[in-house]
Length: 296
Image 1 (cartoon, rainbow, N blue to C red):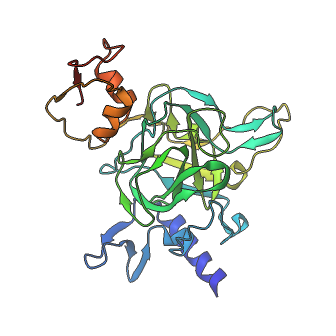
Image 2: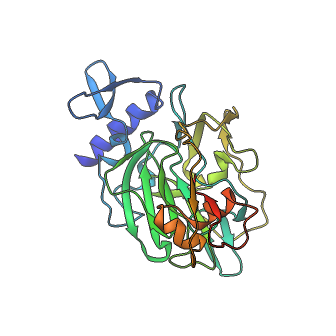
């Protein structure tokens, strides 16, 4: 019966690409549904049966073999916002790592410890805790069935089942877990299986590469290189610039330093991080008593 229900839900999803069906919101529960006639289906329930288990990043609740050969996912609608988790260079791409003879299921983005890490799309927190080699890790589930993962952070700022918007800070960058230095390990998954984040995000122009992604079952999984050309993926190739509700700018504020003060001490006092303070005070190399330090 469960397999039959899954098949019906998937066929419904295929006939109505996410975002194109009539979306309705239950005002009592806040749950969003897609409706056609008398049929009402929760957005991510199409693929996950509303299963929000936080025990593991990858769960085996349904085989990829039960999915259609190709699935169309709408990444963004006119009202959907998105944000880059961290704007910086990629230090290690998705794919096979010859040095360690193992797959790398995401991209590593350079950052400094304490830098804010932002939610890529609106969604709900499924995981927010230490997860093995990921260290402090957050996994967000998004309405279209995608999940994004943010690993190696130094601090978590969200909790499981919390609703987040694109651009919300989910944690602070770090080097926890199996990490060789401060960076963000970022993954995009569907049905718990990863695919290359650069298929949808352009880390050079900081734009979304497509509104709709055509996922083929053969896209999942990473194996040793065979010398063949990299697999091409299908998308509508519409370029969309990053858009999200940025926090309101506060008026400038300053702190008068005392003897023994450091950027780190002042950052802890004002619940920020020393890198932000250094960016706000580029001409101050050494703090002396009486120095005016800009804190925002």
